[in-house]
Length: 231
Image (cartoon, rainbow, N blue to C red; front, side):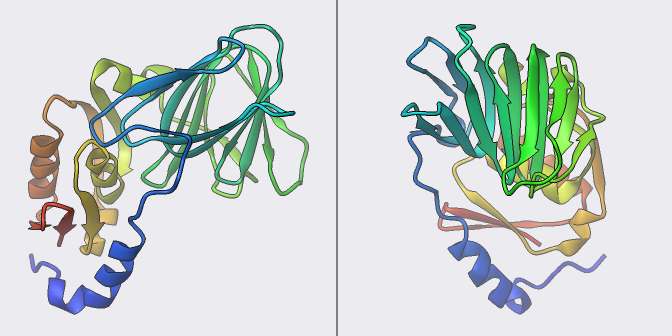
């Protein structure tokens, strides 16, 4: 099969390189790093690799997941918490939940208690997501849909693994790039049509990415150690 010509994709490449800058955040983990922080009431937020979160505890207690994955464990004192992710706003005062906003995917898994999900811009009444449920969120927060992923799948990063379920290869590669130091730029549009499924170890993310690229009949080009082009 013919591969995309990187030279022919220079306009798209230039735009992609401009858009890969980091957003400012109160808490951030770098590629390949995990971390955590505590709120004033003792609640704890665990962060996966390449995750950025803003925090406000003045007035309404609020988290804003800018990018990445988080495991939020509330202290149980009943203090309300609002969490913003894309166009959705989540509200709860107790329990535990997992959030993902990465590689174009928006997901919520509730492990304990209930989380209300509403559109930040206003709209229908909030959807109640209860313990044991996993849902996907539309980017504007207007739709909440059941997910085929299990809670264990969304929490796999805490065990050094990643789970794909009929995931477009382009999205899977973007997710894996979060574990590496270089930013991914995909020029081969065919990769959105191929799917990946299974549980994979993250012991060597670069090797796993290379394997999936080969299986997708694509190639890579490293630029200055900062960017990886897939074409």
